[in-house]
Image 1 (cartoon, one colour):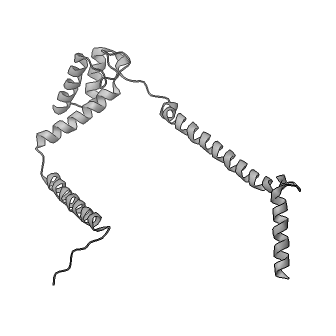
Image 2 (cartoon, rainbow, N blue to C red):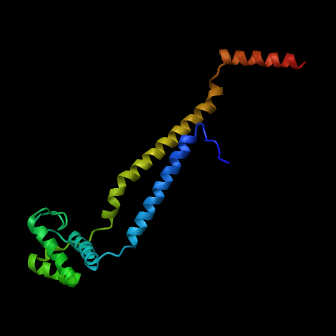
Image 3 (cartoon, rainbow, N blue to C red):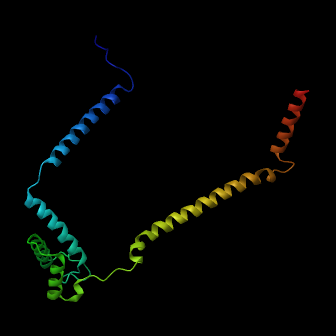
Length: 178
């Protein structure tokens, strides 16, 4: 027996979630199938050599662009040097041999000096100061709101309308209880 179609507020939402789930399942299956397909050996070697050459170029100063690394320099000579590093890595040379050759060619100042410990902490200082300021503001705000609540009954004087109204209500309650 066939069920009647579901009508209601959430029927369209259920269908949408079902279709989105099917699409996600299909995408996951397609990516898994693609991941299982073996890549050609030359493509893997080229990608590995490119990653290593980028890491080396990021560690070296550019002799062509002052103040930049070899990776960030936009000159054509830097591009050629990066290509040379990648090709030499593809040929099987070690990173140390390549760096030594570049030092001999461009001078000792091509290697970056070791960075001090505070160079890693510096970018986080503004965020830490911001969090500290928010904590102090919240603490003071909460403290002032608590002191206002505690001070509120003390501020009411004997002649204020609130005190008179409270006394009247207490008298009414006392007469109703009797």
